[in-house]
Amino acid sequence: MPRVKIARKSTATDMTAMCDVAFLLLTFFIMTSKFKADDPVPVAIPAYSKTVVLPEDNIATITIGSGKVFFGVEGVNIRKSMLEEMGHQYNIAFTPAETTMFMTLPTIGVPMGSLKTFLDTDPDKMKEIVQPGIPTDSVSNELFNWIHKAREADKALNNKSLYITIKGNSKEEYPTIGRVIQILQKQKVNKFSLITAQKSPN
Amino acid sequence: MAELDTSGGGKHKGGKVRSKKSSTRVDLTAMVDLAFLLITFFMLTTTLLKPKAMDLAMPDKDDQKTQMPVPASRTMTILLGSSNKIEWYMGEPGKSAPTVDNFGKTGLRKALLDNYDKVKKESGGKEMIVLIKPSDKSNYGNMVNALDELNITNIQIHAIVDITQPEIDELKKQNLY
Image (cartoon, rainbow over all chains, first blue to last red; front, side, top):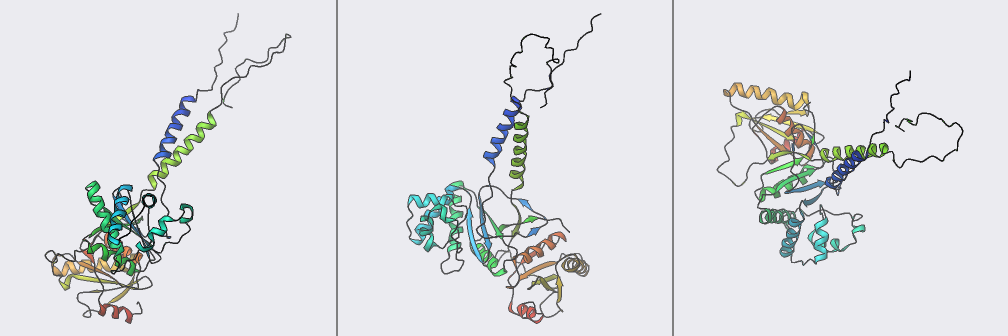
């Protein structure tokens, strides 16, 4: 009697479809992920036990560290009209190339007087320049104007009120922070957020 | 790799030795592994990098209507001094002895809870008001810490107020300025 032979089947599965899906997803995540912009100064944020997640657009961040203040706003259109308005205020005309350069910068920390030269420098060399921070004194009133123009631009372009956050180094001495809060209060921004890390209540 | 030999063993009895036809299939296992590893990485990094923040509302300085007089009997003032130390007192400055304290569970938090109960008992169920006055020698982390303690002890009425000269002198007396 002949033995019944069981056909041996291959255990190899067709992975082509799986591979396709995997790479499709990979491409999607690479495209959508936004890398965290480098802080111009080292900032160790303090921890707080009850935090909320910040929105991703319509937001301005004031970075404070080593006694310097930096300002940045999300959205290239807001940046563009903010720079134009600041140019009017301080009588500085920016070339289209300088405006384009400005639109790519996530944060700025140079006084208005040297902003033009800063924007003219080579993008590769820009990272090496140590930015002195935006002056916070009430004579030049620069930080006040930056925030004010950003809020106006957001109102005009998106009809939203700009969400203002402060990202401060926890070792930063209070006077710098106090001055920034004062500047915000002067333009009736009494509600803002402090960027903090999450910590457990104990 | 993950493929079993299904050819059925070597049955070459004589005959010609033929060159093997190699399969055109490529083993994709390693590639898929790598792709999924990267997917996992990007998925985790995109969701974990969302910045977190705390909301802070400052009292409106210009609006005189909404400013209410603060009853001294129900206020606790916290002065933030240098080297991560605080000093707190109840009521009006100079009338009750200030206490030098630390941040943390046994320091500020205990003081807040004790005073909260005491004020509630003495005033017949009314809430305590806490004023935080950061001095120029304190740092930003101190301020966030103090606010955090207020959040943990669930004291709703609090404000950040500018420090006054007598209070700076008081801090100087304790070597905290």
